[in-house]
Length: 220
Ligand code: DX5
Ligand code: ZN
Image (cartoon, rainbow, N blue to C red):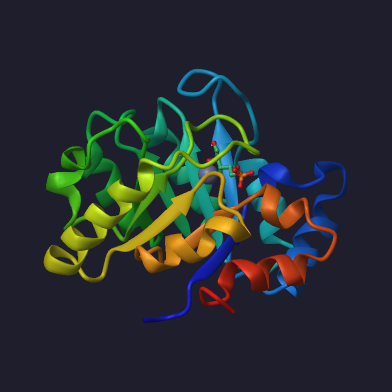
């Protein structure tokens, strides 16, 4: 089993000092940076657009992992690819023509992902396993950082892993929302390849220790 990768979410950073924040988590051993893009329609919150992504691209070599929580994802994949995104996830609940969007993302040289809300059944992904590079399993309802992981999502993650292993071993499973040291071992054991963590990393005084705790094997 390969080592779990950690993606700190900039949503929980101090945006007044964003360059320092990015450098701090890079030095702490983060594997990629997670960008939570919210439009005030798909989720009841507004965050940032491709401009911030492009600015951050200039100051780090970390891969940029863009999570689009928007109703018009298809229109935004090009601007985010141009801004330097290495991975772009769109929500299955928000995209009417998911196959087209995923194909478009891949054609731009970006890894395509599909995000799935806690209440959306795994079956909604049935036809896209072959077209996605990763699935972003939401373990909170999207819109805000600092929420508590919904425990029922653990069972869903286990079921997704079983399908993945059988049908699409190359598809990564990413868990996003309420990830913390206390549940990271369980998530890794259930097959998470990437853990997104906002509060657990940016809220910690020692970010290297926080990243290491999320990555450590259970019981260590
Ligand atoms: C929620 C976002 C998450 C969030 C994670 O809408 O998709 O990425 O920022 O933050 P924490 O780790 O604080 O739950
Ligand atoms: Zn996210």
